[in-house]
Picture 1: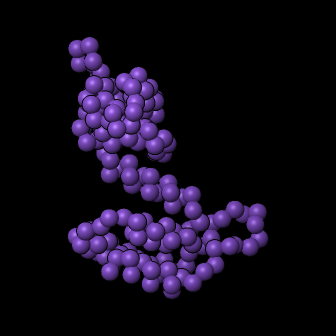
Picture 2: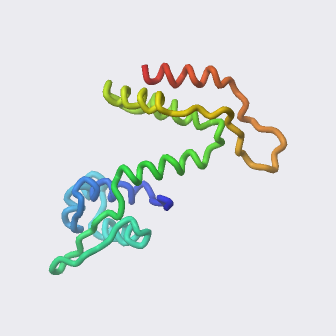
Length: 155
């Protein structure tokens, strides 16, 4: 499955993931003011998310209740994989290092990353998967430096 949602739709999804399920009014109370959105805007975004199968609806009296079709963790995992799919395989390490550098991480978070890296089986070789029509890859760089950057980022 592919997660193809806009930044605005992501704001709505984050509210619903937090609430677990919600009506338009409950969502509006959480996000309308901080985003300067009307209830009509939120309804439009909810309709798009239902159409994209990110949400399901059930009727409760005169209101619709919106429920996510996947957890936030599942969605984030899919979005992370989609990001890596858009970048040359040789540059995955750069994406990961930049994410680690930019993220707010606790000591426990860093330990979790160290454990995941310790369990990761290294690839013998990473092949460039840039566009085939180019005869030369522009992804050549010092992998030893990249590996040192990852270790510095989590230390």
